[in-house]
Length: 277
Image 1 (cartoon, rainbow, N blue to C red):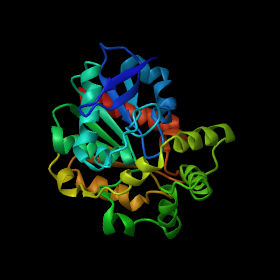
Image 2 (cartoon, rainbow, N blue to C red):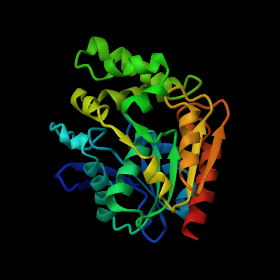
Image 3 (cartoon, helix red, strand yellow):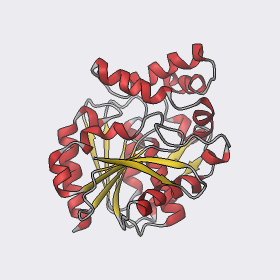
């Protein structure tokens, strides 16, 4: 696995992980809010996926080892997120890829489609995500506990934000994850600075019309017990993309690629192979 940095249009450095098999069709993994490219370790290390596809993941701006710009517009402008995807594809010489977006990563995919178009996407995998970002429509789908957690996540006071970060990490799966994995996920969240958390959570978008115009094949894996993004959100995603298939993971939470990695990897393999056929 190779690692390195590319530079986005606004100068933000983005850290990536790359299986490096450049002659294979590519899958680009885009993680969620407060996590990083290691969220996809169970896909990046999968030998069957690795034998058939070039597997690439990167840290979103504000996360992991990527740059964490101070300016609010670095997070509030949708174009910046689109340019990050383009920077990774261009920097690694990838013409087209299946784009896999988890949670906030699904919004980044929508940003890319809106600003760069669909030409470089062979297909989309929208994992535990929604088409509504911020605003009343997004707030309506959240439970009171989850909605109440987000203001504390953006606090610069550790006494307030650390309990919220711990709660957030606990919400990533339906059943408690192994202790070592829990602390990994908590650590990923803790390195995202409060200014990045605040601005990321204050974006607003409705991507429903964009989805309806898409001619891309789409797979929508969603856990039935997702506490951060209820199944109704995934159902709306699948209903809005004309060529989408909803795959419900019964009893699974926000992270089906961790909680049911074998099934997820098999479905991803089949979907990606068909997308490039």
